[in-house]
Amino acid sequence: MIRVLASVLLGVMVSALPVAANVSAAEIASKYYPNPQVFDNTYGTILSPSEIVALYPMSAEDEAKLIQVVPQCPVNVDGVWYKAEEITLFNGHQLHFTTDKKGGLYAFTDARAMEIFLEAEYGDIFNTSTDKAMQMLRLDRSELFADWLYSGNLMLLDPYAQISNLATLGWDNQISSAQICSSAPVTLWEYSGFQGSSFTMLADSSHAALTFEGWNDRASAIS
Image (cartoon, rainbow, N blue to C red; front, side, top):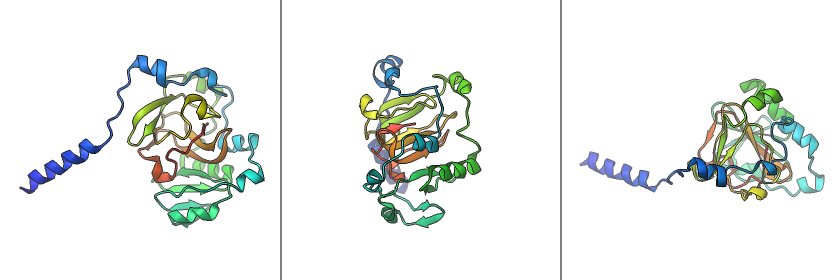
């Protein structure tokens, strides 16, 4: 009897999960794959988050207006652990989020400090030549989804693509889960023009529900 009840319960749980979208090659080409003409920079100059911050700095006035989204887990900010709800202590500050190898959430008030942390964990992940990026052209794409658990509308993203305004693709504040390609990280930016806080997802990582890190339906730009 216990086995029967367990089987029924498992069936109900599975049936309640969202069904991943089955997308044909034709649909990808015509609907889901971003028009290259709207890319600000793809396979040109590969920029790290700190280089983007230097190129597109926030004004002090705009940074003071930033409100942090509470994640679903503790977060380490500049080397100190905080409860999830304590992230609001950093309202008015641009933060650069990422994860370590165990999935722990980290944030830094300086983008270069985040890169140093990631280099210690994973190596020099932002130092890839343009020639190598060209070789990866359309061979290894990240998958960004509109719903949790890798479901809903799908965007295929080439390595090192830079899109300053996701609204041009109809994807502003739409990304809810992601599977990152094996050759390049993907950084989400809170506001268009690479403004606000950021979240760098490492190559070959999976994020079934970005609400866990506080990034569900939050991205307006990608690098």
